[in-house]
Amino acid sequence: MKVVIPGGTGQVGGVLARSLRARGHRVVVLSRRTGAGPDLVQWDGRSQGSWAAELDGADAVINLAGRSVNCRYSEQNLQQMMASRVDSTRAVGEAIAAADKPPPVWLQMSTATIYAHRLDAPHDEATGIIGGDEPDVPGYWGFSVEIAKAWEQAQASADTPETRKVALRTAMVMSPERGGVFDTLLGLTRWWLGGAIAGGRQYVSWIHDLDFVRAVLFLLEGSLEGPVNLAAPHPLPQRVFMAALRKAWGTRIGLPASKWMVEIGAFFLRTDTELLLKSRRVIPGRLQEAGFHFEHPEWGEAARDLVLRWRERRS
Image (cartoon, rainbow, N blue to C red; front, side, top):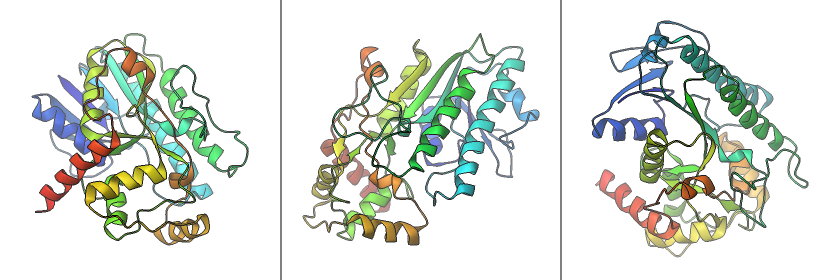
């Protein structure tokens, strides 16, 4: 296949592009970076240009474009997060609509953050509650949900009748690559800081990077459309999640952090506490109903595999 990946220069895009190329597919990445080449084509993420020709005749588009959420949630950053996601999705939709031979499938990155902060029950696509008005959570968390909703709406409203569209409501993708979320969590664990955060009752939804790639291939080759949760079937409370990571690394020590400690740490790291405090309890209802089998469904085993690969890459 020829697969076009807008926004494919990030960590998740790198994992996906390498895996697709290893399977013999041609991957063209659209990037805002300079230095365009045969498989790295420049675009601005907003307007039409010569990059649109890459979509004409392609077998699939997987749009991952969007400003990183690992930042302070200031008004300016939130607006940039919204614009980068909605504008790039609209641009992809317009390019598909204008193509003489539009790609038959368009996978669009979305986020598990679209669901409500919840402890009592999991969210699947059929019964999940969209967030935005939960009691006892910071009001600005609702803007993250609005971003997710606008992101998905931009894809859904695109006039692309010949293209099957899937919104990937993705949990945290765990990969041993440098700078990713697993690398960050393991760094805390190595320095004995991987304990419970604010009590640790909030749920962590995650997916192993190899299962993420397999799920993307499953969706490319299948017939599902609309929102699909990309998350392992067993989310865990944060305190249990980190205890399993500590065990995989081989340490028993994990100092806890109170909410005010997390606020101070997030300020100095220039990130936001929502990423740690919001309970994301998401399960892959539609994937499993369609017959997808997870190779890494349990976090304990997945953490051991990721730790092993992390060590191998740094040995």
